[in-house]
Length: 228
Length: 117
Ligand SMILES: [Zn+2]
Image 1 (tube, each protein chain N blue to C red):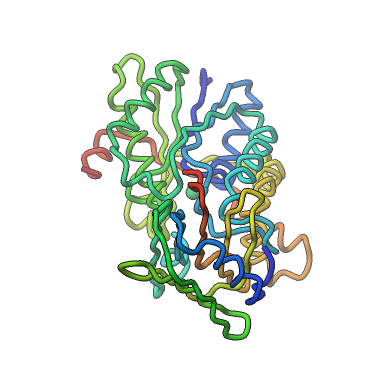
Image 2: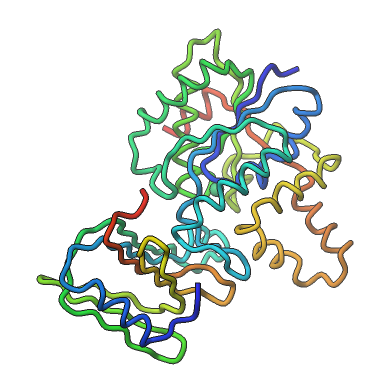
């Protein structure tokens, strides 16, 4: 059993879309989970559907949405205070040092982050790279296992099949509940996926297919060498 | 935010003339544009808390879509595609253009005090 799991993603909602089922599974086993959230998604262009936020009110709204999602997922939240869409322009080492200090404090047995270079959004790639570096910098006997998540359309082609496949059907409803906490972001997206489905069950089946599993690559020296 | 009403917004723009102000200017089609459609391009530009003074400001309408231009001592700032506006309590003028789904595509904001960063 894991001792403590730390999830490192840059945006409020990455945790719900990416790992809500896995987080729920760990929480059910009594494993503490902490989310280190990089930014408040200040630069998001979704303002709600219909829009209820603006560029200046969005950060506070997303912070509240994130806190609600963390409550649903029953995990601790720590904000890293970076700015949306700027992480790749920061000094990677500096972020890694900061992350390393937090990890040394929490002493997790497992860290989950994005797969650098295969995670679409520049913030995903940049924070994933910093998280990987942070774990690599840790003393070998303190170093947690690292799971990385790829989300490009071609990641299976590029990287092969992920070795960690979490069946999360048992936690599907909680995952949807967590996603819906991010009301400013999720509204438009979900109506798009389900717009062709006339009945609710068909829509749910579509989402279950999309969200039925959460998949990760265990980080290895080979993967590290391929990134550099 | 409310749909732009030219005369009201023009009045607000004029209230910032001839003084040091902070500008937020951005345009974006989202970080996922080419992920969702491989023929699309990811484009965007962003500037926040740029200090300027302008001697003329004008909003020009084209049905629901508007353009705003600010004339600086040595240059110009303009934004196209603005649809909505709002005046925040602390005197920040927000103008933005949204697409059919309500997503922000362009924003021009003016304030006497810096924007949060
Ligand atoms: Zn994200």
